[in-house]
Image 1 (cartoon, rainbow, N blue to C red):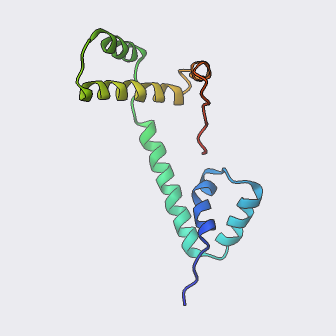
Image 2 (cartoon, rainbow, N blue to C red; image 1 turned 90 degrees about the vertical axis):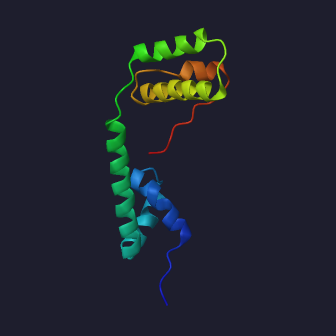
Image 3 (cartoon, helix red, strand yellow; image 1 turned 135 degrees about the vertical axis):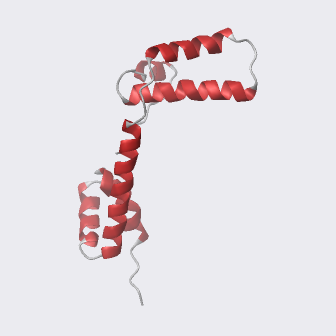
Length: 124
């Protein structure tokens, strides 16, 4: 009969790879990894995926502030839009803001707070 890893531990592997576990959880995962080659392989795959995602994000060109301003102006100036056109423009604006925010070029905290929303940080 084959040994089955506890689901709880397998679910912690991505968090372990990101370094976002508590000390207690990290100790549990490390003790399990010391005994389980299958989970060590899975952790290695997660780390490879993480590295590839980081590379792909680094290779995305940073949108210029001029592009952001032109996009906002175009949305304002065009009266009627089809849903597809509007969706694409909103996506482009959101993507541009997300990239600028992630790279620290745009601060959204005051605007988010003004709306009464809470900005939650991603783990990892």
